[in-house]
Image 1 (cartoon, one colour):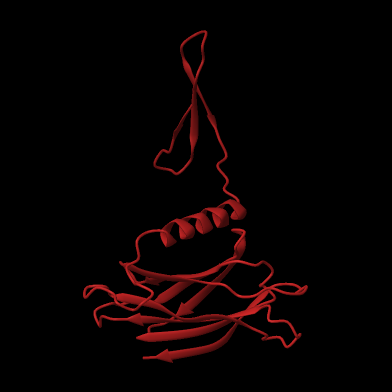
Image 2 (image 1 turned 45 degrees about the horizontal axis):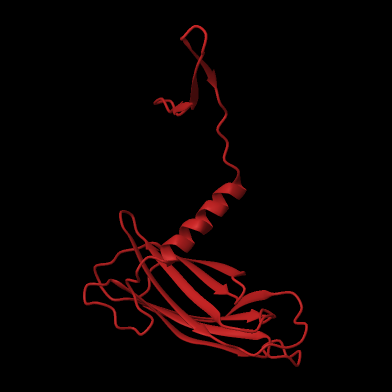
Length: 194
């Protein structure tokens, strides 16, 4: 089966008839659900997170890197004061290192991966320019398993003709305990430098 996309944007399925050797055409409705697009975007974001880092967690980016992403802190605590240290606080900083970088918005993907491989994703959109952005995020009731947790940040600066990206990740081992309740992520602080 061959799918052809003519200039008018319609998709035509071309299938061969076995008896006569001729072709017949029929219109095929190509509808991509929002759910499929979301799954594709998440898979693409995870794939890009595995690309070798342009920005490094230790802040030692190369001289020509226009963007630096640094995770400052990832630790457990009791944010919601329920008596259980089942919450995680993460702090990261995005720094634009070049004055030549022009962008209109930033898309930030924060991934908190549990030891089992399941996890949580927080997507943050920022409109406007800045030189440095520091975010502190509280992940409530997410420490449910013993083992190593991984926090990763993937950031895209989106301009009119260019997209710059940087990423960073850190692994840590919080203690577990109790029945935490429903998971929740919230932005605790935002610091912006122009």
